Length: 161
Image (cartoon, rainbow, N blue to C red):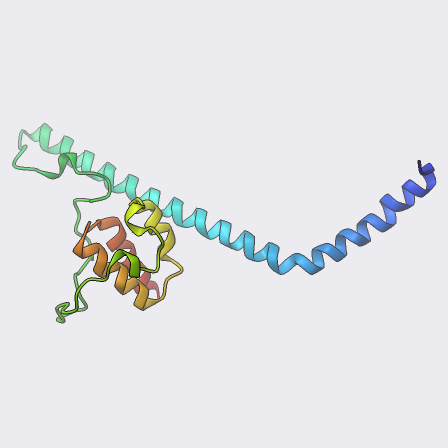
C-alpha cells in the first residue's frame, strides 16, 4: 500500500507525463483510425440519403400518377431499392468506345466476396479503389447484376477524381 502523498505525486505528475508520451507516440494511428471511421460513416450516410431521396421521388411519382388516374405501364413501382428508376449519368463505356474485352470474374475483383455483398456494402468499399479497379468492378457489375447504385457511385467517384 502506498502512502497518500506518493499516490498524489503519481496522479498529478507521472500520469500526465506518461499519457502525453503515449499520445505523442500513437497520434498518427489515432488520426488515421478516426479519419477512416468518419469517412466510412459519411459514405454510408450519403449513400442512405441518396437511396431515401430516390425512393421518396419514386413514391411521389407513383402517388401523383395514381391521383391523376394515369397508372400507365409502370414496371418499376415495386422495383428494389438497388435499382433506382432514374438511369442517371450511368453509361456502359467511355464516350464512343464500346466495351470489347470480356467482363472480369468475381475472383479477379479487388473486393473480396463481391458476389455475396449487398449494393450498400459494395458502395462503401468503392472509395478506396484505383481507376483500373473501378473499371473492373463496373464491367463485372454490368455483365451480372447491373445494380444502378453501384454503377452510379462509380460514376460519382470518377467525376470527383
